[in-house]
Image (tube, rainbow, N blue to C red; front, top):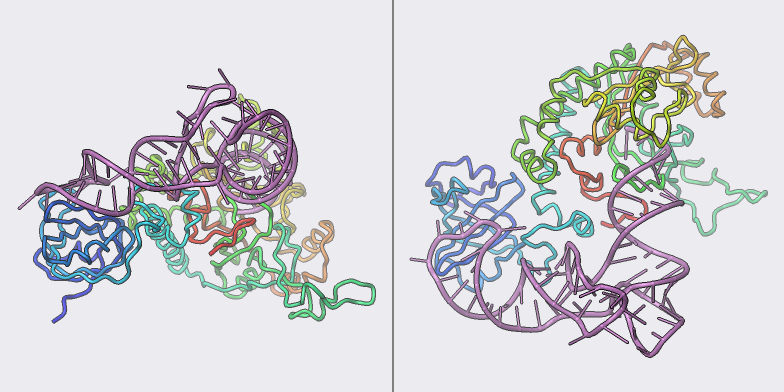
Length: 463
RNA sequence: UCCCGGGUAGCUCAAUCGGCAGAGCGGGUGGCUGUUAACCACUAGGUUGCAGGUUCGAGUCCUGCCCCGGGAGCCA
């Protein structure tokens, strides 16, 4: 009978004496006289499995090809390791080479590389410690998000990727077209005739599924989306991507306070899940990437978030004994330096800021009775800044219509969105979480391009 | 898009005032009975981002462009 093929992760749980087969990629090989050691990693966990090759077990020509990056199958007996660095190791009986990796050209070395360099070889970087850990945590976080909402009675819905509304105010959009851009059909006046395009009108990649999610929330009660989102802004920062993933819950009958409470419970729950299920990877991030990660996560998972209004935030900033590049003034949006001060210095924990001036927020946010502020909320966290943005939505038809008009938006583009207020309207709220920003926060990674497998940024769509 | 900083061997970096382009790691060869970023010896490896200019002479100075990073804006 063939020995059982197991993952490295499974191998570590099997009893000494088991005969088994593992398959994976060689991290390194160390030779001594008459004995070789292979570090084999298959991505199933952070730790590799040490394979011991005694003289004569493998032909020398084969062993020579077992270099960093090569893919092999190893069959042998699990034995206790005499060395302290690993409890068990695999004493090799049979080796099969799936794919060699020419050491003269293989771009990954045993030793560390800069993240900038690894971005140029994104197709290979997941084979290293850091990116293997990032992508395992990425999976765990996605799973935790679905689990959180499912357990609370939310439905996972899918909103369109292609949209015709270009006026949500969330930034520049990517156009989607099948027209011949060298020679588009034109109207008599020379303008491009979009009625001949695939959808009969100009279309774009979505910047948010929120408006459609509201429609579903006003039928199913509690829903959420978790999908790709696109922004064509020429943003060149460690916190922005042109293509990123966003989680957007939307709840009927939730007011702003319920929304904020959900956001806090949500962040705490998904952090707790990762703390409990990704210990080995998190320890790596703590040791090698950011030595504050573990305390920060433990703290956020337990300590209550701070809640202040925008007006209170401005007062705190104005009283702060320090100089600002942009002095805080009521009516202006909070600058990055302001957000960082609030969350990193004033409170040293996540802060939920609510009730922003109406002029600086989107048309769909519910107007407060003061007529000056809207029921918006941003969740700010140390180092990353704004990680969640949300609001209670304006459910009053007349007020919403007036807001659309005063923002200079075209009423006819929002006919169905207004319909939701015309027929069976209800108070409702929701928010958006930047999935990659959450991953940055959890892993301590400093650049958003290093928490997504193949980042899309201005000038870069390789891979 | 704006403001800074950078681009030299496969990788990470050094090169004084403008004067012979170097090191560590990685690779190759050999050695070493249990290694852990193994170790020891030897060895190969260069269009100094691209295009011009100044100069007896440019990695170094000047101009333009490209790319990368940090900060800002926009936002999640």
